Length: 234
Length: 293
Image (cartoon, rainbow over all chains, first blue to last red; front, side, top):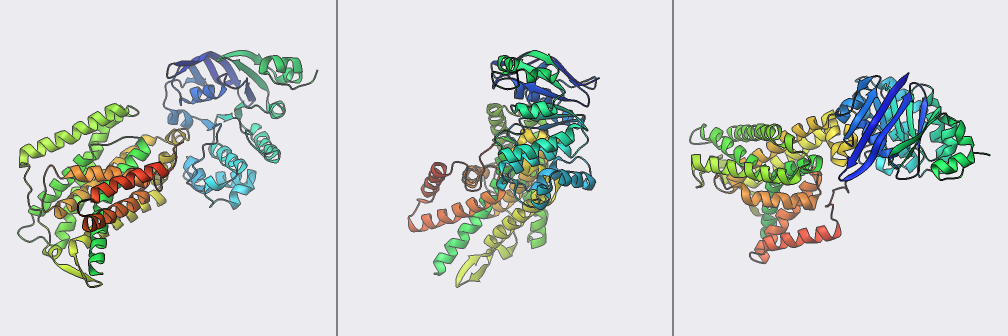
């Protein structure tokens, strides 16, 4: 069963036609990796699903059409989003960032779970988020998305710009979360994709050019052809 | 020394009036990106409603009656601001030129309606007689009304701060000033916060309208003009969306303007414009403003 079905999604930003009929499915309780070269429309696809960029076509969450629905209602219906550049609120404290994201009045157990996953956030709860390191800010961004019960998690390049040690830390957290939720992951780090993904969607020039299992990621020729990077094994 | 103290405190009093106008403008622009030229209309509505309440109190207005006039004027301006936001602004989000045209239109309509009704002449605002007395501060005789302006501005600053710091709507407003789209992407209808900000901004402007009327020796439909221009300058210098920034900028401008007018006769406005240019060159986001995401 598909948690999310995207069909013929078109997005125009100003006069530029960015997505040209993107179509793919995100199976429930699985991790789907959305891959492609830089600038092919992966982040735009996530924003299009979320309504941050107005689009045409169809996006269904558990069979319910959400295209044209205001972003805040889409999020309330169960899609959480971790943006590419974290977009934490730098003038608010860590706790305020989390409190803002929480939709439950009694969020103590949710906070406890988050602090178990990211103990560093507990010790830095009163710290202004803008003064955190890049890795800590990424933890806040992921934690915000995990505070509520969600159907689908959209995560855009969670390891971008992080030091190798932090990549491992963030990857471990995502691996724990991946067991419990449906995830649509945009990620350039192929090692992380191979570790997490059950399903792979490849985009090029605003279109989907491949959908299938992650086995191909082990084939370096396929990876080079599809993604323009070296990776995998012959 | 007495002159120095007198000019300084008078400048702070004037700055307090600028702050009352600017705090709402700052939050409205910072959160919604709305360049609200109707803010002068909110101030005028608050001034006239306050005038009407104060006029009902008879020949001599007591301090409590004056405070009531201020609160009712603020409330009326806040509700008027909310009405304008719901009727007009909600249809024009992200259409900046249309917003500017519509809000200028609202301001002109308010001025014309009140002018047609009451005329454009100043009408004496019934204020407590205590306002005409002077208070001795370090040998300087400070007009008592200045103390009221400063106290009111501080109370509104603290009130705004408490709302922004300790309530959920305040948290949403602070986050929205930084990154409106991300607030939406957390499942929060940021437009509810817009209405709150319009009401708070209108309330401050209405209270400011009553005090500006006292400072200007009367109420008139034309009363908002100069204060609105100074309000915009305060917002730019203080930083869009920063209420404390507006407070600091308003005090700076009030004091600098008064000193410049005293020591370099008539150059007060010129010095303020130079200050604006310097801030824009050195720190375009304003004293406490943030570069927007």
